[in-house]
Length: 145
Image (cartoon, rainbow, N blue to C red; front, side, top):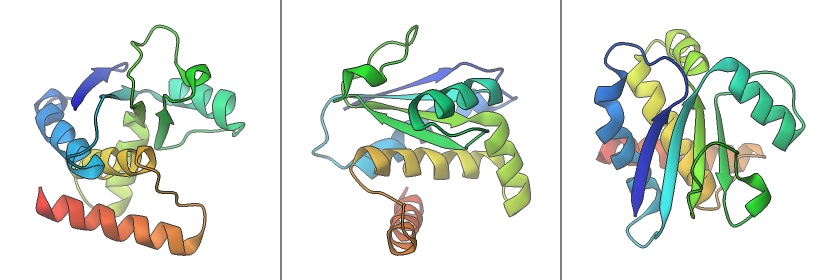
C-alpha cells in the first residue's frame, strides 16, 4: 500500500518531519492486506468547511473527513485520485484540539490519521458503541506504533 501526504495549508515547523509517522499510522490502521493508495491531505479551515458542506451537507469546520474512492464522485478536483481513498485533516482544528486535550500537535495528527484510516476500512462512529470501539482501536494502534 502506498500512502502519500500532501500539505494544502502552511505547515508549522516540524510538521513535515511527521510524514513517516503519519504513513506508518495509516498503514497500521488499514492492515497488511489493504492494497492501493491513500492520500493524507492536511487542509486549512476554509478547505475542510467546503468539503464538509459539499459532501456531508454539514456546516462548519471538522477535524477529519475520509473519502473512500470506490465512489468516483467523491474525488476532489486538483488532487490526484488515490484508488483506496483520501483522509483530509484540518490542521488548524487539529492544533486547537491538541491544545484542548493537553497533548502535542503530532499526537493529534496521528490520532486523526488513524481515525480517518479506520473510516476507510469500514468502521463508523455514528453511535456511542461504535465510537467507543473506534476509540479503543485507535488507542491500541497508536500504542503499537
